[in-house]
Length: 113
Image (cartoon, rainbow, N blue to C red; front, side, top):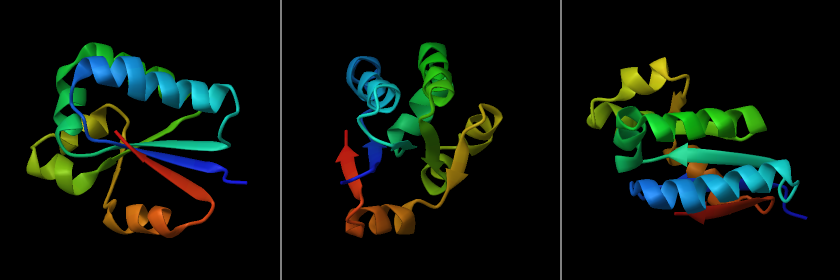
């Protein structure tokens, strides 16, 4: 049985974030569909998070529900928002290798949105 879900969030549309990405991530964790759920903020979504207070509130709710939220530090630096994401309490790491490992891991399902 696959226990880990990694959601690679790349679509910076707020409606998609609220009504698909966040809704599924929260329900996947709180309803036990997946043991571990990680939301990865990648690309333009990093900028959206820093500019949209509704998105920030939703991310805090995700974290409270047990979803791990992490961002690509390289993307955040390129967009000039690394400090802002750090101030919002979002973990920033170099996601290239962990993402590749997740793709190869038989116990992890990768969803890209």
